[in-house]
Length: 460
Image (tube, rainbow, N blue to C red; front, side, top):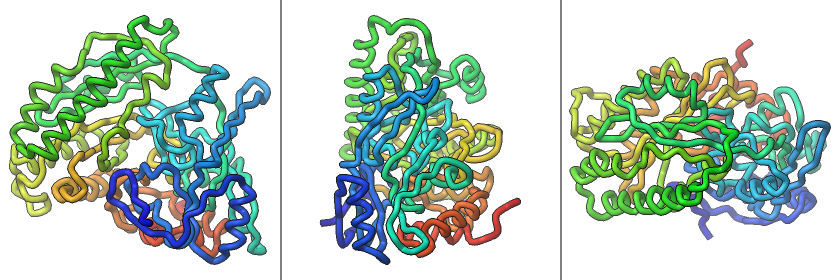
């Protein structure tokens, strides 16, 4: 039976799909399948080919335990690799705790989210916060064993590994006390004004509204104030109007009516009316930071640029989308054909602090990165225009701004391009070769774009 990812852009047929219920069963599967390609999946909420397995595919959904303990003054959570983030949040919340950062959705598994550098806005990625990673792999004698990684470059590699070191069976992470977030919306004419507001609202994520070309900021910050008594109404408004109704209109425009002028009219005049801007609400962290972005099938490309490059990068994004949408044709042989694609979703920008990892998208340096997300809701068979625009932007932004593509999303760069933007790839490959010298935990795509890119001396 073919395995298909959430976005329906990746399909593969492994020879075996197994669902181990314990670490011992994982080791036994490795024992019985020596020399075969072995990969693991979470909830398939990825758009890259990192998930592909040809021989043995492990579905880790039964490894979903959550154990919380006190270690000195800190709370420590050991979470099974297949545990969905929403289950981990529920278990932590029972003890007044939560995770140190959250992405847009909570459907992912903890191992899948950290292995690809999943992030929210204003903090590090989830990978950065892992303090222990337990991995099932083979030892020097070829026997399956559990490696517990807690420090050094091995931990920096294991935090965001794309499954290349072995089968992650659990992670250890420090929980933090449950907290509340204050949120409200505001529209800006200029990017610099939206960025300036981050000093007061450090967890802000903001959007470039296509065809209106203004900035809508979702201002967020931690708050000591009690939960707003209207918070349940706000959550209902957000779910029914933004998560469901607005997206249904987008699907109608993109998949059925297919009239570019209506898409542009919708964003210029309707979307601004849909956002209630003065409404300030305080609510629990996970109720504010998590959205229902998994309700409707879509495909996403996300690239990361340093703050100093963000303004120029967004100028390129706007120029490209206006050209592809036929609004402002630019005569250049390097651009896709004018009018080939009308972008139909807000471009989301989120700040990610530098990660202590080797290859997560925000790894290294002192300057924060900004994730620029482009999403299409077109049917899988009607995405050619999106791919033309996305491919152009990915290649240009990597060359001009050192933009790094998200490992778990659509990634069109080749090994040469990836090697330039991920300087710690050689060290990552070195560690992978030490823990998995036979390469049984890789697939063809990873060999091509990651290991080929890392076959050079690491920078000193």
